[in-house]
Image (tube, rainbow, N blue to C red; front, side, top):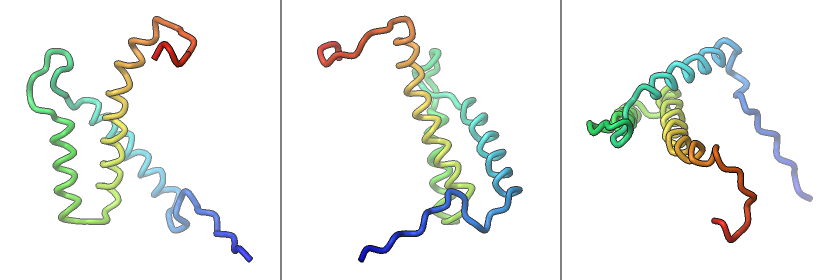
Amino acid sequence: MSERAEPVALVPPHESSEEIAAEYSFRGRYAKELEKKRVPGVNNYFGPDELLEERVKVNQQQMKTPGRRGEIIKQEEIAKEIIRRISVPIRSTVIGKVEKYTPTNI
């Protein structure tokens, strides 16, 4: 009665190992570049938000040339960097304390 859906491959079948290696290399280089971007309020920096400016630039480029894999990868890496920057201060404040979670110590 019910038909099984075909399993979804994580890597499209038309991509070769060279293309996959190039993508991982690009992601790594772009992630390193994003780590250098400065954000206001961190280390007494009160200039423009360079990470937000990069996201705006990528959005504008994506509107000009939709569907390009490079811009999609850049959006994903910017999102990862923002999440990393949010989670680092939280982790650094919790490292010294080890508490058992209970609903009362939220």
